Image (cartoon, rainbow, N blue to C red; front, side, top):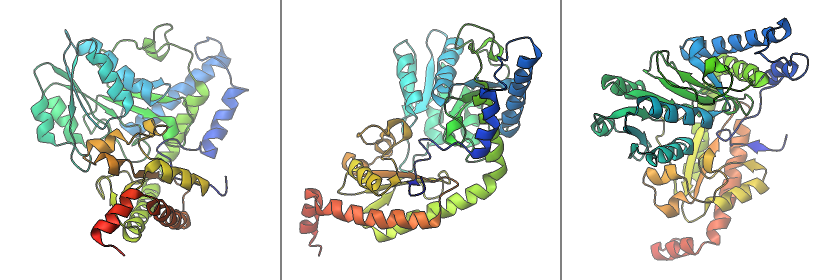
Amino acid sequence: MSDLIYLDHAATTAVHPDVLKEMLPYFTDKFGNPSSVYGFAANNKNKLTEARETIAGVLGAKPEEIYFTAGGSESDNWALKCTAEAYGVHGGHIITTKIEHHAILHTCKYLENRGYDVTYLDVDENGLVDLNILEAAIRPDTFLISIMFANNEIGEIAHRHGILFHTDAVQAFGQIPIRADEMNIDMLSASGHKFNGPKGIGFLYIKKGLKLKSFIHGGQQERGRRAGTENVPGIVGIAKACEIAMAEMEERMKKETELRDYLIERILKEIPYTRLNGHSKKRLPNNVNISFQFVEGESILIMLDMAGICASSGSACTSGSVDPSHVLLAIGLPHEIAHGSLRLTLGYENTKEEMDMVVDNLKRIITNLRNMSPLYEDFVKKNHIQ
């Protein structure tokens, strides 16, 4: 792995060594089922309580408002489906955006097939929601607004109209400060493997007082709302990852923002016919998304891979697809430019030297691909470029 440059942290991250160390005993010596009554198992039940307290403390929530799930997609499904069941009387109306993760978009389509109405808001060229358009979309039967992590004004608008607000914070939690108690958030989804925790574990924050019913039926785990024996190693791991992320957040944000801006500046200055997708500052500290004209993202990825560089051409949920990101199309990019997009997402272990290596490789790769591109050849001829 020493020769590998990994820049796809939005897809997944490596488990932090301290997280793995914390988890290991719960696979072997401390393997008890938390639902059992004897002391050996009760110790694990106490560990789950500690994990809830850790996450709740970071989120500005109560421990009993944290429900463990298998990850972000399950949390999103739970939030939307059970809110619709509990609050969508005879159907009802949901508001979301066109740039959500497919766990939201596909769940909304599922609900539409069951009689619910869904409004998919457009976003501007920076991927931001116009708050006036959001408020204008509210109807008397609107019961839920679900928009990926954003500012507290969206939650304020929702609550002013008596509407619940859910946010998919899978890419944001552990990366930037989030306080549910200060941001009018009723439900929040997060996933451990996005911030150096293990895969297969996430959580859904459900504000106390919401009457959401069980998502998985069976036993009384997760206070009767999500049946199934708890993933104790995973829960221990996500809590430890959360603890580390919060302790290192300020320093990490500073480092990643500096590397991000350095990478963006070099690419835009040294490779012609490129554009930054999204706002230059209102973006996650580790996120770089660039479109390269006259080339295809898939070809860039293959050649980067050959150079030992891991990246993505779209959102994490479509990283296995050759289609352009639905997010880039939603912000107004033409199909042919969206097809030439590259997403580079940084982690705490990345260095400036790696950024230089990435840019140097990209300059070579883009030049080679454009030299084989009929579109670029036509552009050069038409514009008399030497």
